[in-house]
Amino acid sequence: MLSKPLLSIKGTITAGVVITIVLVIAVRILAGM
Amino acid sequence: MTVGQEIYLDLMRLGHIFSGILWIGVLYFYNFIQAIALPKMEASARPQYQVTILPFSLLLFRWAAASTLLFGLLYIAGAGLVDSSYFETDRFNTVAIGGILGIIMAYNVWFIIWPNQKKIIAAVQDTIDTGAAAHADQPKWARTALLASRTNTMLSIPMLFFMVAARHLPSLWS
Image 1 (cartoon, helix red, strand yellow):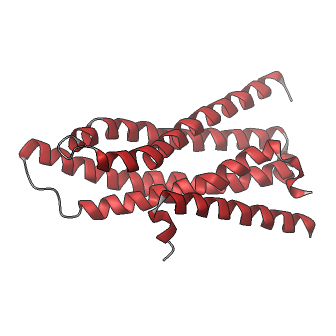
Image 2 (tube, chains in turn blue, red):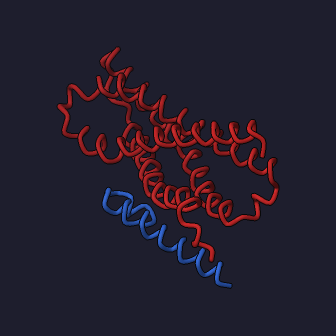
Image 3 (cartoon, helix red, strand yellow):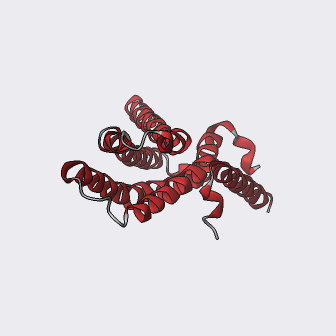
């Protein structure tokens, strides 16, 4: 379930950090194209 | 850029930063303090909290969210009017990523968190006034509001990163 990490504070922060890293990598790949 | 335009952009920036910090500050209070501490509060005291501190903090919370969005949009509109090439800059691209996340978050505040919290507050008030049993749907409303609030806490991390990166990480797109 997508909402599973949101059931705990730790999971929420981890998910937020993962999204940040994914977006930064995506931007850097886009910029390099 | 004229002095008037500079002042306008500075005021929009100031309004955006102040409202944004107020909004996310209250969001973090809900998630990092209230969510943990409220269940530890004596059950008989909890309804008092829910009909005094909670409505007042939610009032600040949702209007801070709305004004953050408004000031941000007024800034972007102003910056674009002064110089239309603003929309082609890396700075705008970065701020737009944060902005999209912020718009999703403001939507969650106004259309998911607030309507559910409003129902909870009314039900708790009803219980205090009439002694009626807690509404059967209360756990459902609380769960929906909690998940939306946690979603916003999750999204706030990339949102803040990209908002700050627009100015402080110019090499992001290079």
